[in-house]
Amino acid sequence: MTTSGAAHIAGVYEHPLRSIPDKTVPQIHAEVAIGALADAGLTMADVDAYYSAGDAPGFGALSMIDYLGLDVHHVDDTETGGSSYLVHVRHAAQAIAAGHIDVALITLAGNPRSGGSGPGGSARFADAPEASFENFFGMGIISGYAMAARRHMYEFGTTSADLAEIKVAASTHAQHNPDAFLRDVVTVDQVLESRLISDPLHLLDACVVTDGGGALVVVSEDVARQLDRHTIPVLGGGEAIKGTRAGRVDLTHTAAVVSGPAAFAEAGVTPADIDYASIYDSFTITVLVTLEDLGFCEKGKGGEFVRDGALQAPFGRLPFNTDGGGLCNNHPANRGGMTKVIEAVRQLRGEAHPAVQVPDCELALAHGTGGSMATRLGSATLILGREARR
Picture 1 (tube, one colour):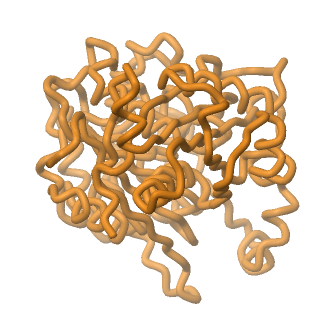
Picture 2: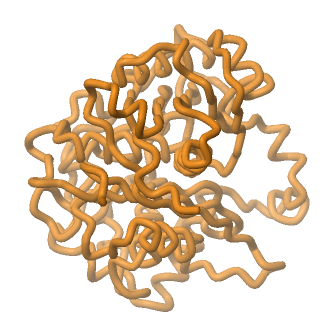
């Protein structure tokens, strides 16, 4: 069963603050939920499905549904890290196509910058089956991505300057975003001169850590027709998990090699058709490898692809992350997938900042990554259109 065009993103909202010390995580969830529903022209009473992930406190969706006062008959608590919220869009589209629901609300919130706990809590990670085999020996998020970067450099000749091009593009966009955490434009040299945090990654190769959140409202085509808001059809999607394969892990690719082709096939388009891309950017290496895996360039050619302003809006080869992305703008609760969908919707609606709005943006890709490139991760890809394709 295809879901192409059956579901529309009708509302999006990104919390404007990057430090929220005076609000609880449930309060942030509520604020972004209200914001996204208002953007769509709907209310809590219209919601019949709710989606959350590991950032939701307490019993997850069970606690949040009660807190928000929702009356729903469809719940999804899928957890794949930062890619969760794209998976949720995909699952909502499937439920809508099957006739089970009409209005799905997806929320994300967290306050790690203000001292709140990280997603899922430390106990959850400590009890993971891999903990005694990896954590004891110092495997962490940063060191894992550094390993992936070094391997890519070894196999394909990628350089730190290539990775820095990705940060430069993100910072060039972030200067136009008044809410961005980092708004200063940087150069390749400044990225390379920033402090080394885990060889070969520098401080400016890493995403920001922010409080905040975001929400999406996904509706059926029938509901979309009744709304005054410009709704964005979900044309295709894919999701996949990459594991360690008992130690035989390839550090140079992600599960986007599966989720990307599935999304393109369902939408009936190719990478060459995409006008704008929102790519998860926990680190610069994440973007480079994902671009390869999604088919925007050959494996090992990512370094060449991103050079010379290729990712800069509005006229680069593939404008990306025009809000500044996780590298400069916002990485709420250390989970960047939500904001990738939000900015893709802005581009398709023509609501991005004029300095970075892609002209005649008709097709956008949003991609989320959760976990670590060095171990296990979840990838999710969405193809979104300005108008439904018939």
